Amino acid sequence: MSVHIIVSYDVVDPDGYADYVSRAVPLLAKHGGELLVADAEAKPMEGEPRSVHVVLRFPSQEAALTWYQDPVYQEVKKIRLASCDNTSMVLAKAHVPPAP
Picture 1 (spheres, rainbow, N blue to C red):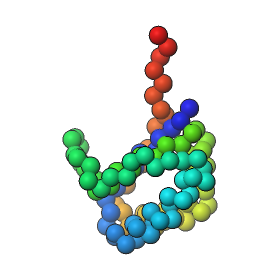
Picture 2 (picture 1 turned 30 degrees about the vertical axis):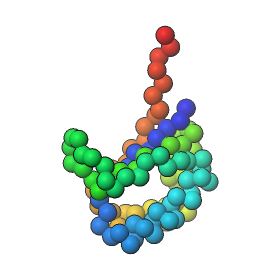
Picture 3 (picture 1 turned 90 degrees about the vertical axis):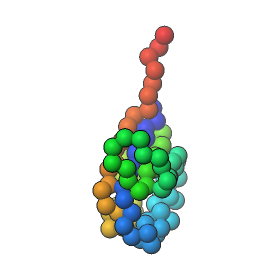
Picture 4 (picture 1 turned 180 degrees about the horizontal axis):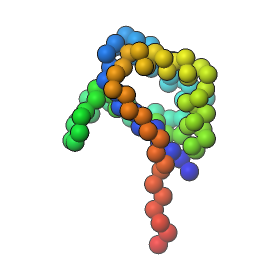
């Protein structure tokens, strides 16, 4: 079953964030991940909006966790953490409707 990682954050260092993106995106393919949404202009509808919203899809929870725990990503993640504030990240399972 596919899973999604949903991330929201406020970019405080655009140059550092650009470096993060250029390094992080190639690691997704290594783990079967896809970048579905990366929006810096999302329309706020409820709650506190952040400056960037991202949705990633992975073929399984194991693939998502392997990506997140990859030692290379752990180094790249430090760039994101240094260039962003107010980060929220969740791993959510894809919805499987009940059988009729």
